[in-house]
Image (cartoon, rainbow, N blue to C red; front, side, top):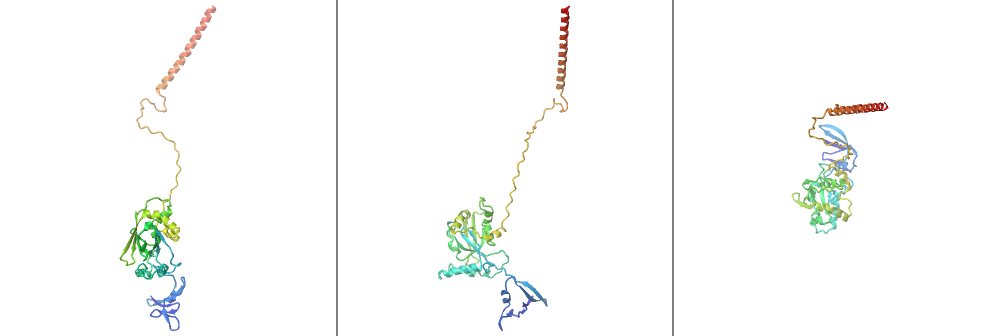
Amino acid sequence: DILLSIDSIAVANDGTVPLRNSERVGCEHLISSKRIGTQISLQILRDGIPLNLHVTLSPLPRLVPLCDGFDAAPSYVIIAGLVFMSLSAPLLSALSDDDDDDDDDDTENKVDLRYLADVLDADKADPETQIVVWTQIISHDVNHGYNGLCRRLPRLRALNGTPVINLAHLAFLAGFGSRKLKSNDTTPPQNEFLEFDFISATGCANTTVVVIDTKLALAAEKDILRRSKIPEPFSYDLGPLLRKYQLPLPKEEPEQPEEKTEQQPAPNHSTPDTTDQPPPDQPSDNKKTTKKNNRKKSRSRRNQNQNNNNNNNNNEESAHA
Protein backbone atom coordinates (compact mmCIF):
# COMPACT_ATOMS: atom_id res chain seq x y z
CA ASP A 1 0.00 0.00 0.00
CA ILE A 2 1.09 3.56 -0.78
CA LEU A 3 -0.13 6.20 1.69
CA LEU A 4 -1.54 9.21 -0.20
CA SER A 5 -3.21 11.31 2.51
CA ILE A 6 -4.22 11.41 6.19
CA ASP A 7 -7.48 13.23 6.99
CA SER A 8 -7.40 14.78 3.48
CA ILE A 9 -3.87 16.14 4.06
CA ALA A 10 -1.59 15.00 1.22
CA VAL A 11 1.52 13.04 2.13
CA ALA A 12 4.59 13.89 0.00
CA ASN A 13 6.90 11.32 -1.50
CA ASP A 14 9.37 11.86 1.36
CA GLY A 15 6.63 11.10 3.93
CA THR A 16 6.15 14.68 5.13
CA VAL A 17 3.08 16.90 5.53
CA PRO A 18 2.78 20.71 5.78
CA LEU A 19 2.86 22.21 9.29
CA ARG A 20 3.18 26.02 9.28
CA ASN A 21 3.73 28.18 6.21
CA SER A 22 6.60 26.46 4.41
CA GLU A 23 7.53 24.09 7.26
CA ARG A 24 7.06 20.37 6.91
CA VAL A 25 7.15 17.51 9.41
CA GLY A 26 6.84 13.76 9.23
CA CYS A 27 3.39 12.39 8.63
CA GLU A 28 3.52 10.62 12.04
CA HIS A 29 2.70 14.02 13.54
CA LEU A 30 -0.87 13.75 12.24
CA ILE A 31 -1.27 10.48 14.18
CA SER A 32 0.68 11.13 17.38
CA SER A 33 -1.12 14.46 17.93
CA LYS A 34 -4.48 12.71 18.25
CA ARG A 35 -5.98 10.83 21.17
CA ILE A 36 -6.37 7.09 21.46
CA GLY A 37 -9.68 5.95 20.03
CA THR A 38 -9.89 8.75 17.46
CA GLN A 39 -11.06 7.67 14.02
CA ILE A 40 -9.11 8.98 11.02
CA SER A 41 -9.46 8.58 7.27
CA LEU A 42 -6.67 7.29 5.07
CA GLN A 43 -6.34 7.32 1.31
CA ILE A 44 -4.08 4.60 -0.03
CA LEU A 45 -3.11 3.19 -3.40
CA ARG A 46 -3.33 -0.60 -3.61
CA ASP A 47 -2.50 -2.37 -6.89
CA GLY A 48 -3.01 0.94 -8.72
CA ILE A 49 -6.52 1.37 -7.25
CA PRO A 50 -7.15 4.24 -4.79
CA LEU A 51 -8.99 3.21 -1.61
CA ASN A 52 -10.48 5.23 1.25
CA LEU A 53 -10.18 3.62 4.69
CA HIS A 54 -11.38 4.59 8.16
CA VAL A 55 -9.27 3.35 11.06
CA THR A 56 -9.33 3.82 14.86
CA LEU A 57 -6.09 4.80 16.56
CA SER A 58 -4.70 2.56 19.29
CA PRO A 59 -1.26 2.46 20.90
CA LEU A 60 1.37 -0.02 19.85
CA PRO A 61 2.10 -2.38 22.78
CA ARG A 62 5.71 -1.63 23.72
CA LEU A 63 7.99 -4.05 25.47
CA VAL A 64 9.03 -1.24 27.82
CA PRO A 65 5.93 0.82 28.78
CA LEU A 66 6.19 4.59 28.50
CA CYS A 67 3.56 6.18 30.74
CA ASP A 68 2.76 5.43 34.36
CA GLY A 69 -0.96 4.81 34.87
CA PHE A 70 -1.53 4.14 31.17
CA ASP A 71 0.59 1.22 30.07
CA ALA A 72 2.90 1.03 33.11
CA ALA A 73 2.19 0.23 36.77
CA PRO A 74 4.46 -0.04 39.85
CA SER A 75 3.84 -3.76 40.25
CA TYR A 76 6.29 -5.78 42.34
CA VAL A 77 7.18 -9.26 43.56
CA ILE A 78 9.34 -9.86 46.65
CA ILE A 79 11.13 -13.18 47.02
CA ALA A 80 13.52 -13.64 49.96
CA GLY A 81 13.94 -9.86 50.13
CA LEU A 82 14.76 -9.51 46.42
CA VAL A 83 12.43 -6.91 44.88
CA PHE A 84 11.46 -7.46 41.24
CA MET A 85 9.60 -5.04 38.97
CA SER A 86 8.80 -4.81 35.27
CA LEU A 87 11.06 -2.51 33.30
CA SER A 88 9.35 0.74 32.25
CA ALA A 89 10.24 4.31 31.36
CA PRO A 90 8.90 5.68 34.69
CA LEU A 91 11.07 3.17 36.57
CA LEU A 92 14.18 4.19 34.61
CA SER A 93 13.36 7.85 35.26
CA ALA A 94 13.05 7.23 39.00
CA LEU A 95 16.33 5.33 39.11
CA SER A 96 18.06 8.06 37.08
CA ASP A 97 16.88 10.66 39.59
CA ASP A 98 18.35 8.55 42.39
CA ASP A 99 21.65 8.31 40.51
CA ASP A 100 21.76 12.11 40.12
CA ASP A 101 21.46 12.48 43.88
CA ASP A 102 24.41 10.11 44.42
CA ASP A 103 28.07 10.90 44.03
CA ASP A 104 28.96 11.61 40.40
CA ASP A 105 32.18 9.61 40.72
CA ASP A 106 30.26 6.45 41.65
CA THR A 107 29.67 5.27 38.08
CA GLU A 108 30.23 1.59 38.83
CA ASN A 109 26.82 1.16 40.47
CA LYS A 110 24.82 3.41 38.14
CA VAL A 111 22.28 1.97 35.73
CA ASP A 112 23.85 1.45 32.33
CA LEU A 113 21.18 1.83 29.63
CA ARG A 114 23.42 0.54 26.88
CA TYR A 115 22.66 -3.10 27.64
CA LEU A 116 18.92 -2.24 27.56
CA ALA A 117 19.08 -0.73 24.07
CA ASP A 118 17.70 -3.91 22.48
CA VAL A 119 14.45 -3.65 24.45
CA LEU A 120 13.83 0.06 25.04
CA ASP A 121 12.35 0.68 21.58
CA ALA A 122 11.08 -2.82 20.84
CA ASP A 123 7.42 -3.74 20.34
CA LYS A 124 5.77 -6.61 22.12
CA ALA A 125 5.56 -9.85 20.19
CA ASP A 126 3.39 -11.34 22.96
CA PRO A 127 1.02 -9.10 24.97
CA GLU A 128 1.92 -10.92 28.20
CA THR A 129 5.69 -10.49 27.90
CA GLN A 130 7.47 -8.21 30.37
CA ILE A 131 11.11 -7.42 31.10
CA VAL A 132 11.52 -8.36 34.78
CA VAL A 133 14.40 -6.59 36.55
CA TRP A 134 15.90 -6.79 40.04
CA THR A 135 15.54 -3.26 41.41
CA GLN A 136 16.58 -3.46 45.08
CA ILE A 137 17.07 -5.76 48.04
CA ILE A 138 15.58 -5.73 51.54
CA SER A 139 18.52 -6.78 53.70
CA HIS A 140 18.08 -9.95 55.72
CA ASP A 141 20.21 -12.86 56.83
CA VAL A 142 18.68 -15.02 54.09
CA ASN A 143 20.09 -12.78 51.31
CA HIS A 144 23.34 -11.76 52.98
CA GLY A 145 26.11 -11.06 50.48
CA TYR A 146 23.88 -10.18 47.52
CA ASN A 147 23.33 -6.49 48.30
CA GLY A 148 25.58 -5.02 45.63
CA LEU A 149 24.34 -7.10 42.70
CA CYS A 150 21.11 -5.23 42.04
CA ARG A 151 22.51 -1.71 41.66
CA ARG A 152 22.89 -2.00 37.87
CA LEU A 153 19.37 -3.32 37.26
CA PRO A 154 20.05 -6.89 36.11
CA ARG A 155 17.36 -8.60 34.03
CA LEU A 156 15.87 -11.82 35.36
CA ARG A 157 15.99 -14.52 32.71
CA ALA A 158 14.89 -17.67 34.55
CA LEU A 159 13.96 -19.10 37.94
CA ASN A 160 15.07 -22.67 38.58
CA GLY A 161 15.66 -23.11 34.87
CA THR A 162 12.20 -21.91 33.78
CA PRO A 163 12.19 -18.74 31.62
CA VAL A 164 10.23 -15.94 33.32
CA ILE A 165 7.47 -14.43 31.15
CA ASN A 166 6.29 -11.62 33.43
CA LEU A 167 5.85 -10.67 37.09
CA ALA A 168 2.73 -12.81 37.56
CA HIS A 169 4.57 -15.81 36.12
CA LEU A 170 7.45 -15.13 38.50
CA ALA A 171 5.05 -15.10 41.46
CA PHE A 172 3.62 -18.40 40.25
CA LEU A 173 7.06 -20.00 39.91
CA ALA A 174 7.90 -18.84 43.43
CA GLY A 175 4.83 -20.70 44.74
CA PHE A 176 2.73 -17.71 45.77
CA GLY A 177 -0.31 -18.97 43.85
CA SER A 178 -0.74 -22.28 45.67
CA ARG A 179 0.08 -20.68 49.03
CA LYS A 180 -2.61 -18.07 48.49
CA LEU A 181 -5.26 -20.61 47.58
CA LYS A 182 -4.19 -23.10 50.25
CA SER A 183 -3.11 -21.05 53.27
CA ASN A 184 -2.84 -24.18 55.43
CA ASP A 185 -0.69 -26.04 52.95
CA THR A 186 2.27 -27.64 54.71
CA THR A 187 3.69 -29.58 51.79
CA PRO A 188 7.44 -29.12 51.28
CA PRO A 189 8.59 -26.90 48.39
CA GLN A 190 9.27 -28.60 45.06
CA ASN A 191 12.80 -27.15 44.77
CA GLU A 192 15.32 -27.17 47.58
CA PHE A 193 16.89 -23.92 46.33
CA LEU A 194 15.71 -20.83 44.46
CA GLU A 195 18.14 -20.27 41.59
CA PHE A 196 17.79 -16.87 39.90
CA ASP A 197 19.47 -16.54 36.52
CA PHE A 198 20.17 -12.90 35.58
CA ILE A 199 21.47 -11.23 32.46
CA SER A 200 24.34 -9.11 33.71
CA ALA A 201 24.47 -5.38 33.04
CA THR A 202 27.92 -5.81 31.54
CA GLY A 203 26.52 -7.64 28.53
CA CYS A 204 23.92 -10.15 27.42
CA ALA A 205 26.54 -12.89 27.11
CA ASN A 206 27.39 -12.76 30.82
CA THR A 207 25.08 -14.09 33.51
CA THR A 208 24.76 -13.76 37.26
CA VAL A 209 23.32 -16.56 39.38
CA VAL A 210 21.82 -16.01 42.83
CA VAL A 211 20.99 -19.10 44.92
CA ILE A 212 18.85 -18.98 48.09
CA ASP A 213 17.62 -21.84 50.25
CA THR A 214 13.87 -22.23 49.68
CA LYS A 215 12.97 -23.20 53.26
CA LEU A 216 14.93 -20.28 54.68
CA ALA A 217 13.25 -17.92 52.20
CA LEU A 218 9.78 -19.09 53.24
CA ALA A 219 10.66 -18.80 56.93
CA ALA A 220 12.03 -15.25 56.50
CA GLU A 221 9.18 -13.95 54.33
CA LYS A 222 6.91 -12.69 57.15
CA ASP A 223 9.81 -11.02 58.97
CA ILE A 224 10.99 -9.24 55.81
CA LEU A 225 7.49 -7.94 55.03
CA ARG A 226 6.89 -6.90 58.63
CA ARG A 227 10.11 -4.89 58.84
CA SER A 228 9.26 -2.92 55.71
CA LYS A 229 5.51 -2.73 56.51
CA ILE A 230 4.60 -4.41 53.22
CA PRO A 231 1.25 -6.26 53.37
CA GLU A 232 1.84 -8.88 50.67
CA PRO A 233 4.82 -10.36 48.82
CA PHE A 234 3.33 -9.23 45.49
CA SER A 235 1.16 -6.31 44.39
CA TYR A 236 -2.61 -6.75 44.39
CA ASP A 237 -2.95 -6.21 40.63
CA LEU A 238 -1.06 -9.44 39.97
CA GLY A 239 -3.73 -11.56 41.67
CA PRO A 240 -6.05 -11.98 38.64
CA LEU A 241 -3.05 -12.56 36.34
CA LEU A 242 -1.61 -15.14 38.71
CA ARG A 243 -4.66 -17.38 38.29
CA LYS A 244 -3.85 -17.86 34.60
CA TYR A 245 -0.74 -19.87 35.39
CA GLN A 246 -2.03 -22.12 38.16
CA LEU A 247 -4.14 -25.23 37.89
CA PRO A 248 -7.57 -25.18 39.55
CA LEU A 249 -7.74 -26.99 42.86
CA PRO A 250 -9.75 -30.21 42.83
CA LYS A 251 -13.20 -29.82 44.29
CA GLU A 252 -13.73 -31.66 47.53
CA GLU A 253 -16.67 -34.03 47.24
CA PRO A 254 -19.15 -33.86 50.15
CA GLU A 255 -19.05 -36.80 52.47
CA GLN A 256 -21.93 -39.20 51.94
CA PRO A 257 -23.75 -40.38 55.09
CA GLU A 258 -23.05 -43.98 55.90
CA GLU A 259 -25.98 -46.29 55.31
CA LYS A 260 -26.79 -48.53 58.25
CA THR A 261 -27.10 -52.10 57.08
CA GLU A 262 -27.90 -55.14 59.17
CA GLN A 263 -24.92 -57.30 59.69
CA GLN A 264 -25.36 -60.58 57.91
CA PRO A 265 -24.06 -63.72 59.58
CA ALA A 266 -20.85 -65.01 58.19
CA PRO A 267 -21.44 -67.67 55.59
CA ASN A 268 -20.60 -71.21 56.61
CA HIS A 269 -18.53 -72.69 53.82
CA SER A 270 -18.46 -76.17 55.41
CA THR A 271 -20.53 -78.85 53.73
CA PRO A 272 -23.78 -79.32 55.69
CA ASP A 273 -24.78 -82.82 56.76
CA THR A 274 -28.13 -83.44 55.07
CA THR A 275 -28.32 -87.20 55.46
CA ASP A 276 -30.96 -87.19 58.23
CA GLN A 277 -32.57 -83.87 57.43
CA PRO A 278 -35.85 -83.98 55.54
CA PRO A 279 -37.04 -81.35 53.12
CA PRO A 280 -38.32 -78.20 54.89
CA ASP A 281 -41.94 -78.74 53.78
CA GLN A 282 -42.20 -82.40 54.98
CA PRO A 283 -42.28 -83.64 58.64
CA SER A 284 -39.56 -85.99 59.70
CA ASP A 285 -40.10 -89.71 60.37
CA ASN A 286 -39.06 -89.23 63.99
CA LYS A 287 -41.83 -86.72 64.52
CA LYS A 288 -44.39 -89.11 62.99
CA THR A 289 -43.28 -91.94 65.28
CA THR A 290 -43.45 -89.69 68.35
CA LYS A 291 -47.00 -88.62 67.53
CA LYS A 292 -48.13 -92.22 67.03
CA ASN A 293 -46.62 -93.27 70.36
CA ASN A 294 -48.32 -90.37 72.12
CA ARG A 295 -51.68 -91.36 70.63
CA LYS A 296 -51.19 -94.96 71.71
CA LYS A 297 -50.29 -93.93 75.25
CA SER A 298 -53.31 -91.66 75.58
CA ARG A 299 -55.56 -94.48 74.19
CA SER A 300 -54.14 -96.99 76.69
CA ARG A 301 -54.68 -94.56 79.55
CA ARG A 302 -58.34 -94.14 78.59
CA ASN A 303 -58.82 -97.90 78.38
CA GLN A 304 -57.17 -98.43 81.75
CA ASN A 305 -59.32 -95.76 83.39
CA GLN A 306 -62.44 -97.33 81.95
CA ASN A 307 -61.46 -100.81 83.26
CA ASN A 308 -60.84 -99.36 86.70
CA ASN A 309 -64.30 -97.81 86.72
CA ASN A 310 -65.91 -101.11 85.71
CA ASN A 311 -64.12 -103.03 88.48
CA ASN A 312 -65.26 -100.50 91.07
CA ASN A 313 -68.89 -100.87 89.97
CA ASN A 314 -68.71 -104.67 90.19
CA ASN A 315 -67.28 -104.54 93.71
CA GLU A 316 -70.10 -102.26 94.89
CA GLU A 317 -72.78 -104.60 93.51
CA SER A 318 -71.23 -107.63 95.22
CA ALA A 319 -71.13 -105.84 98.51
CA HIS A 320 -74.85 -105.01 98.38
CA ALA A 321 -75.66 -108.58 97.57
